[in-house]
Length: 174
Length: 174
Image (cartoon, rainbow over all chains, first blue to last red; front, side):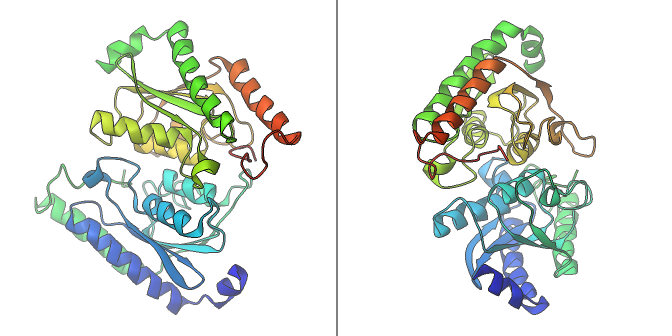
């Protein structure tokens, strides 16, 4: 089933779901958290959504991907997210890339890369290490400009004081 | 404050807290989850405990370290766990090592290593990468034999069918 679904994946479908991830990212922006959003898709339907709530929830565990994985596992009823695709606006950090491997997510679609701390190809690629018991396929650059602009707009707002510095932060950027 | 505390750390203190982590690991064992336990210490006191509940809770996010970090952030009231020491019976996986970096835990004390999937020195060392904005100091081999024996006992039980295979599992071992 999952295989059949993957076969149908095309750029249009990826853009459709990345737009949904962007909607999540905007929720983070509004509350003063670095705008990163994520959706998880199973058999063509969104089964989980998440957006960065690190500062809002005061925990480093509240990254968009972790929150979405948490919800998806509840829907699937298993710790293995086989057949699922994750759409995320920014390249996952080392924790989230690790969670993707642990949860056996088979495919990850990324908006823009994070050169300073990304762990799916930038600093390191935890999704493609032969030593680990799971590897995920990666599609990069889907709605890249939009995802990237949302981040730069946020940090520009932060610099001019339009966002409280204590609220917004260096999430995955240094 | 944290610095002063670190200065006082000795092997006896480390063993004391590792015994507490082992108590947590035994809770996982009893419920059929791979026996991994963790405690987080701040200013000489345990502020959070966790044990592996992956199969019990049906989520890959329920590793001992993640559950302990979640509790510790609530106690500290901040996503940064500055001044905290994590004691964990098995070398953290890539997700948990990532969470340690994200939560800025400054010191991690490890019981036994995980050659197949450990991400604090075995397969990779995510706690000591110059590219990331945080590095943690690592102390290895505290009560190593006890931590290691608990794991081998568990997998022996699993092989002879004393633990349900669907319950117990390959957590961080392949």
